[in-house]
Image 1: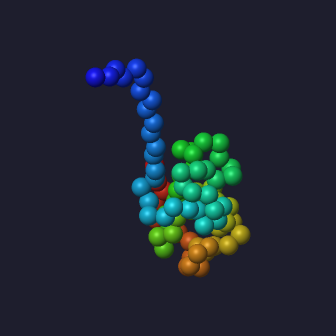
Image 2: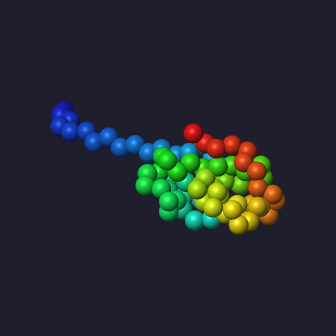
Image 3: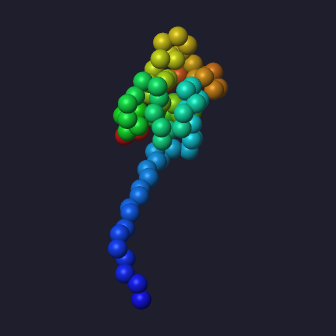
Length: 82
């Protein structure tokens, strides 16, 4: 028989989305965009075309260009993850 002296718990989390990476900043959604200081404040945003980007990344993008960077359809937010 043996004794357990210590237990080290680890955890991970992920956003519930189909895509892994922001097409603008090239960071995964588990990481943050260049504007954020913590991953949880950097929310992914899904467009009506179903492409997903960090909210800050796509907000900066649509100031200059009003379309999705991937498929070029007009950009409209379908939902922002919470």
